[in-house]
Length: 529
Image (cartoon, rainbow, N blue to C red):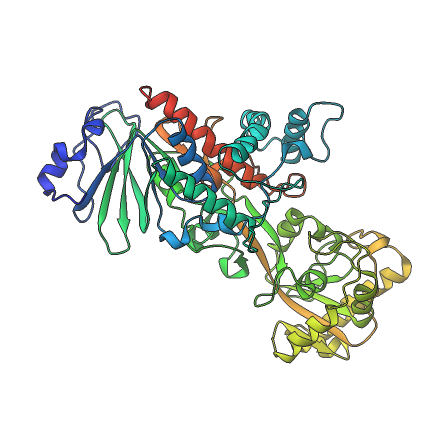
């Protein structure tokens, strides 16, 4: 489909651009949405367009959101093109690593009782976010969640267990990967045209300011133009863009680590929307998970029991406690507190190691170790890390020696732990009111210290959207023909992650927002289907 386009014919709107796009007016490459006057002639992008494609619905991104949007639109009869910066081997992006799909029927904490599942789910989400999320969007999300989950199974063939986790493959493939491949294969069967290795970087608009396609650049520098009647931005947020992360979160990127990222989530969707005057909704919202030990299995005993457990002690770069450590059982709270520190250190003693091996954890930190179940491999995993001479895992016979190995002030660390042990003897935490249940002295040598890094999964704040996944302009009106979903779309979340009350909400949001965009786009812009 490669075409030779001169710069003149490209600017003047040659018929090679596609009749469908030209029917709405000449395309602009520096658009001013909602301008009262006729758009000025725009400069062509750097380089010549080497291929032009026409479709009804363009989807940017092949994650859960994009594949749901593409398959739903194709199911409704639209001609769909999906572009993604990844190669075909990377189809799915971050969604390859997910586990939960979310479940409205499971409900949420702190919600109305004796009401229907959707009402209970809505109230729990809205209350958790203190109504900083969009209540209209949240209401429809609660209403449609189970319908979209049913469609996921009935049409896409994806199955999951009662807890909302994707079923793994017969050969042990992760549930996220299985779901992605089923959706990808379904898209191919439905006639969705996939263009990989092409990053969408600029939206096209017609003379009336409506979105009419996008320009994409391949890894080799070729420019592809895709003309469309509607575009859905599903590029996965900006978790791999250090500059955007620091701009919106005010947290230094080198103080956190992204888990399960493909490295392609560069904020393309947000930047394209912002170029058309879109609003943002809580772009600082990050779904922090917990402190982890880079280089170690994040679901193993060393990381979960040693670095993330409730009845231990956390210190910051000044060798000071900074919170009630039991908050670690809530990923949101641990992230909100942890991101305020330059470094997070955990300290345990031999008595704690022995307790974990014989009695198990106290709180259910994650889905990997249940309270009361012994974890006999804990000591072995610590010893293996010490043998590797990992500077993030150290052992010492005294607190002062441990502090030196961690790079902390020995006197300050000794004083802080002595104070904490005194609180344990008294049964009352005067600093942070930690429950007596979790006050456990650190006084049995040898001592172990872990220098952790706060981890996060992805960004969840993005372009402001409404209950149809339409992107909202600064004037609070939808930008015609433009949609966003998943991590590119802000509306469902307030300034933080709601995993503690609605696990799997980001995956369900990805599915629902993609579904909404496809349905509305087909009904609004492709009426002949």
